[in-house]
Image (cartoon, rainbow, N blue to C red; front, top):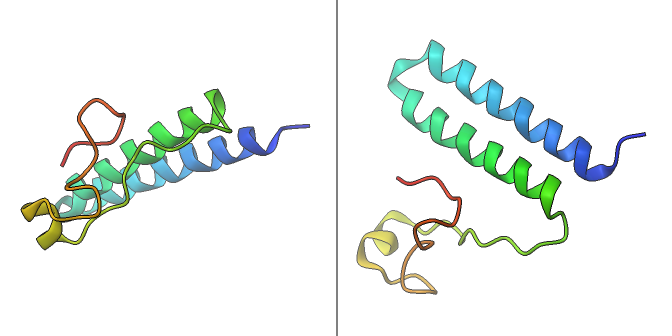
Length: 86
C-alpha cells in the first residue's frame, strides 16, 4: 500500500502535467502554467524526500508588497531555495 506522502507526490505530479497541458492549449497563460507545474513538481520531490521537513518557500506577497520588499520578511524567498523564479 502506498504511503500518504507517495500519494501526495503522485497527485502533485499529475497536477503539474495538467498545468502543462492547459498551458500548451492556451499560449496566453502558458508561462504561468509552466511556473505552476514547476512549483508542483518541486513540492512533490520535497514531499517524497523530506515529508516532515519545513517548507522554505515564503508565502506569496501581494504585488505591491513584493515590488516594495515590504512583506513580513522584507520580500520573497531567497534564490536557490527550489521556488520558481518569477
